[in-house]
Image 1 (tube, one colour):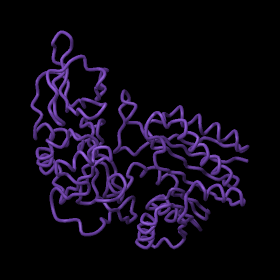
Image 2 (cartoon, rainbow, N blue to C red; image 1 turned 120 degrees about the vertical axis):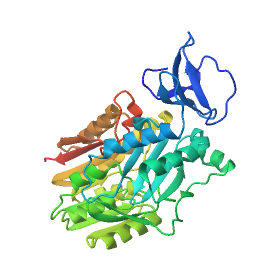
Image 3 (cartoon, helix red, strand yellow; image 1 turned 45 degrees about the vertical axis):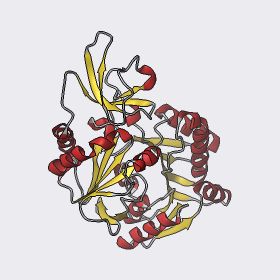
Image 4 (cartoon, rainbow, N blue to C red; image 1 turned 30 degrees about the horizontal axis):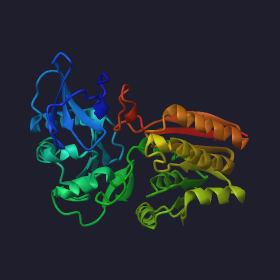
Length: 381
């Protein structure tokens, strides 16, 4: 078991006393029968055990979960809200609750499970959440890999576990902007909160012509418009996502946003071929690498969209580009950017290296928690 890492893979287990069911409490001993850790067992996952506690005996119960939730809340208590009513409450492994994420939108908490091992503990977890954070409503989201297994046990993605029914999208605020999300059916937990500080970074776009590719609900586009952009082109393949984007624009009086329903790869290629130019380009695509086997193809995809975006930059223009694929390491990402810049024939300065917002903390010894890589570049030719 790698020191301080919260995952124990199946191939690392030398022996076990029984078959075990999802959510059983695994007690981990070393070769000398010394107690090392306690964790949640998942026989259907290559990550066989997710570590909850290291050291001596400890009850894994409502109070244990409440302690972890209170500690996570205390860590975020000093974060400036700045007109923000949505943030990450629990960031899985980083907050000592591996395989579990909790995001808050106004009074609604969205609890997302990445392992079926949490299912038997949901009652205790919900009680702990009520005592520690007192949300008005709790919505359950399930990772695709476990949705079928959970459905067999009566858990459905998007179900309201506590509080009143979710009759309509939630309206929350981010840095003063009013935004809509659907916690029951939207991607992730309904919105992408990890880019909040990066959206603040690129938001000063007074008089600029801007592009938000892979726009989803257009939150980057909203910040660009609020920063004084003269035009924002928002490209998104999902008509449903564009519908929410247009509602967000109406909520904020963002009349300079022009939506385009299109595949961003195709649109970028055509825009570069026709000589379009933008003062600010944002590339915030979905994860291209679902596993290590798809890494080469993913890096080729990242290079293609970044190369096209570099061709679209006006002299002095800014490119904000990101990857949320945790299989794409930082070295891979910045190596890809260097290759794209070399092929573009443009001179590009690296202004900032960025990651996720502070409510999505990374653990230095757990590289998987540093999934979001981002850079702000400027064309100087």
